[in-house]
Length: 82
Ligand SMILES: [Zn+2]
Image (tube, rainbow, N blue to C red):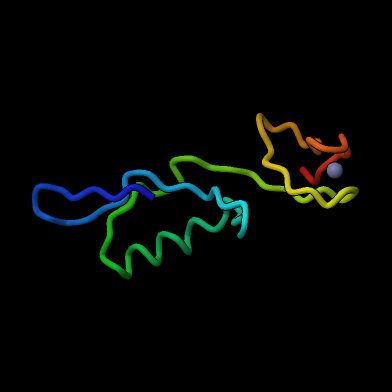
């Protein structure tokens, strides 16, 4: 997350991403992020500014970051869940 402060001293987030290769949050987790920021009184852009799609490979168990909607394991070429 990138925080910025406006002319009135209010904090907001200018960039927020779901890129976490440890936790691998789905893009659908945005409402929870928004709710937490709103509880803290921090403005936000209304959605992830950089959204990542994670899939675990059913064959080799490797964690994949899906790029350009190609749902194929980068390690073993197995098909990933769309
Ligand atoms: Zn694989």
